[in-house]
Image 1: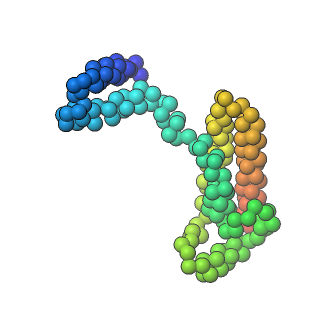
Image 2: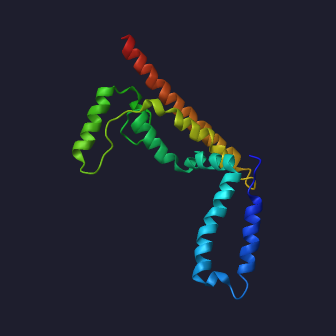
Length: 177
């Protein structure tokens, strides 16, 4: 990426500073139209120059750390097939038929929109990626967050691994008989 567009941006900043002087060109309809055209172009040159950083920033799952309760609900529902939102581990030994009947009872008793029974266990690794990237949320001016977020993400990742491992054990036991 040897061709940077910093020169184009600097030229636009100089030109816009000159055109902002009284009498301002930007007060005219043509000046406003030009600004509406060039300002997004300048922003896109910034994206081009730092493409790798932009991809990392937009593709990061670190901000999902702040939505842990929603992640837990999604993990329990879609990956483990659990339909209760409680955090107790008493339901680890329930069978798939019990879970399906529990889901049917919930969906029959409520008129609200419900999530269909569709277990997506193959996506459980995404939840570990959320917690592995959560340390990116630590700001350099708040180093004490490192222990809080680090310990919390480690505990959540361990809980998800344990839940997934127990689900895999149940599947293997069902296959082997």
